[in-house]
Image (cartoon, rainbow, N blue to C red):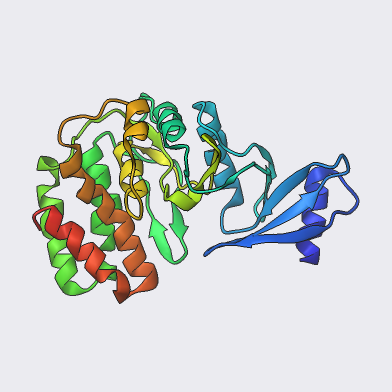
Length: 268
């Protein structure tokens, strides 16, 4: 804590600053600091603060809400404190508008310049002009050595059929990459921030699949979101399988049935 406080003070150009515990997640702890002018900021440690800072800035450039980055180095990320609480709550309509901005088409290749990880689960992001190739290599095949053998065989079959299940060249959108409801901040009918990104360029439907993993998107969301391509419901289990596999690898057999359910939904 003493070293972290000193590093935060250095980044802010201050002699000293006090940190108060704010929250803890699976991979990092958050602290609140009060600046001399009375503003509060959030201080986040973790494995890749500068990488996360770049993702938050990329999200903000699209017009979607994200915490403003104040400073970052190899050990800590400093962000503005945003209003609201976690979860979309009554702001599903505004969430649809926010993701429509985030998922606006770009001319990028699929992927991200850097790899990262969820805890011990490595997340490769090697860029590719083919979405099928990106998803096959970086979100399915990379799991084969780390899951039970019977599930690995089913994943291999899915990987072989993937070109018939998802588009090869969907619009390359900036995706949040870990957009469960806890990473959506809202106040009233307004989304105040998308937080804790694991971003890359890909099919925006992957964020919708993640939001639907433990919750439900309603009519107000879809009324304000981009028009969906035909076959959305058939593609959704392919994309939902990825976070289910991460949960299986991180937390064990309790998530096996979720993985098997999505495999079954894909016909594998």
